[in-house]
Image 1 (cartoon, rainbow, N blue to C red):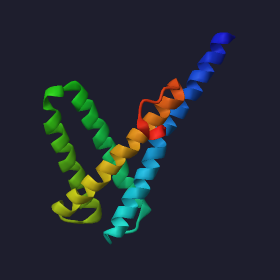
Image 2 (cartoon, helix red, strand yellow; image 1 turned 120 degrees about the horizontal axis):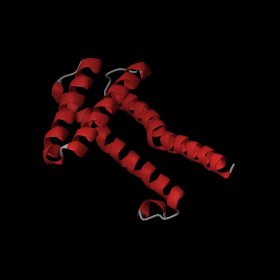
Image 3 (cartoon, rainbow, N blue to C red; image 1 turned 135 degrees about the vertical axis):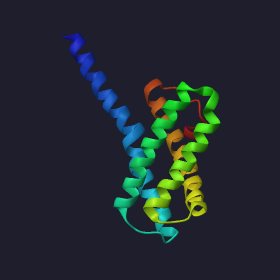
Image 4 (spheres, helix red, strand yellow; image 1 turned 90 degrees about the horizontal axis):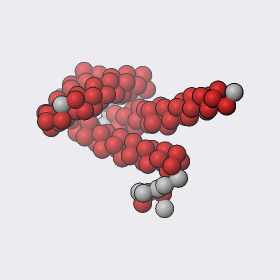
Length: 136
């Protein structure tokens, strides 16, 4: 019986971790991408921002997987990721490559910082140890 309670607790903890690491940042990123596109007067569609962010997440996951497999080619994989992401923005928002790169860099930096905060927050909750100055 004790094992069953621990298994259920682990499943609930896994769902909670999944929501914090992936779902919440994904939704925030989608709204941020929409806000940036609206600010640039590219469009106001939440559906387009959702589709772009979903495909962008797939590109990021594949890139991360490739980086973990082939560490020697990390810089090349990151450059390919930027190019593919820029092409994605070009297709969905019908903009030039340079304009799409500007948006990619702006959103990428913000997404990186957002994920860093969420991962540090989750680490503090799970372990009780906060090494980052973000939560002091």
